[in-house]
Amino acid sequence: MQQRAGSPGKGVEMKLIIAAIKPFKLEEVREALTELGVSGLMVTEIKGFGAQAGHTEIYRGAEYEVNFVPKVKLEIVVPSDLADQVVETITKTARTGKIGDGKIFVLDVAQAVRVRTGETNQDAL
Ligand SMILES: Nc1ncnc2c1ncn2[C@@H]1O[C@H](COP(=O)(O)OP(=O)(O)OP(=O)(O)O)[C@@H](O)[C@H]1O
Ligand SMILES: [Mg+2]
View (cartoon, rainbow, N blue to C red):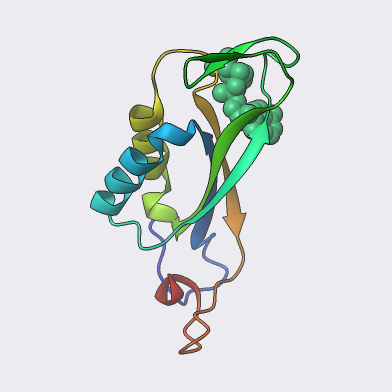
């Protein structure tokens, strides 16, 4: 379904994509997303665990025997039309084929505001 800015009630205008990826993939993923037309994103250094909780995972050549492994979390708000391509791009770019490559979640976004101008929703991205 086509989404239009400023048409409340016609579906969710924006999506939030949360992705945990391997830190060394950050720059490559950022470049790919910029090429796709993503206009902004948040980056946080995190630690986490996935399906191998309590087992080992390789990070920068070292085998981690702890529960938590360093990851980078991306938070990206995009027009809903772009969400599938963002997910595909992250999946393709961040994949090494080894365990711990990451995980992606997609959520609905109710509202966005650009502080400087007061623009809202897709205009604020
Ligand atoms: N169910 C979850 N909820 C929230 N965050 C998660 C979840 N699963 C994974 N994560 C986050 O994603 C990071 C990467 O997860 P990871 O790639 O190890 O997932 P996985 O399911 O174990 O897949 P793989 O078998 O490929 O390792 C974790 O370190 C954690 O920060
Ligand atoms: Mg894992």
